[in-house]
Image (cartoon, rainbow, N blue to C red; front, side, top):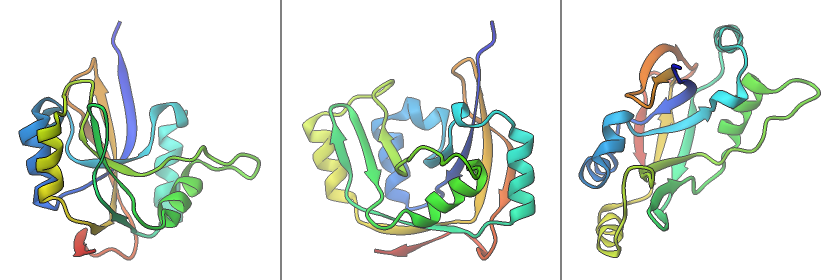
Amino acid sequence: MKASRRQATLFLQRPSWVNKIRLDLNPAQARLIDAHVTLCREDEVSDWEELGRRLLDLQPHAVTLKFGSPYRDGDLVYIPCAGSTRAFDDLRSMLLGKASAIPRKHLPHITLIHPRNGSCSDADFASIISVSEPFSYTFDEVAFIQQENGGIWETVETFRLGDGANAKMTDG
C-alpha cells in the first residue's frame, strides 16, 4: 500500500547557518526536506483544492516570524519563534478555520535535527549555539508539498502571499 502525506509549508531559503547545520548534523533530514515551517499538517486538511482556492481568493499577507535561540529536547533540536505568532496564526485560521471551529494551536519552528533520522550530542548542540543568532524572516509563499512512502518531499503547488515582494531575512 502506498503511503502519501501532504502538508502546506513555508520554506526558508536563508540564513545559511540554518541550512549548514542541517546539512552537517542531520543530512538525512536535509535530503528529505529543505528548512521550513509547517503551516498545515495532512491531518488538518481534508480538501487540498479548497485550501488552494482560499489562498487564491483571500490573498493573505506575507508572514514575518522572529526566531530565537535553538532549543534541544534530547535528539530533537529546533529554533522556536521568539516573538508574536499572530500573522502565522491568522493565516492558519484563514485557511483552516470555520465560524464554528478554531484550528488547533501550532507553534511555528524550524527543525534543525529530527530524532527520526538524526542525533544530537552535547558537542553538536554547543556548535549549534556558537553559530546561531536570532533573526526575522518574511515568508511570501506557501508550498503544498507531498511525500510518498517516506521519500523526498516534492513541491506540488505554490501560492504567493500578498505584500511580500521577495522572501527576505532581516537582523533580529
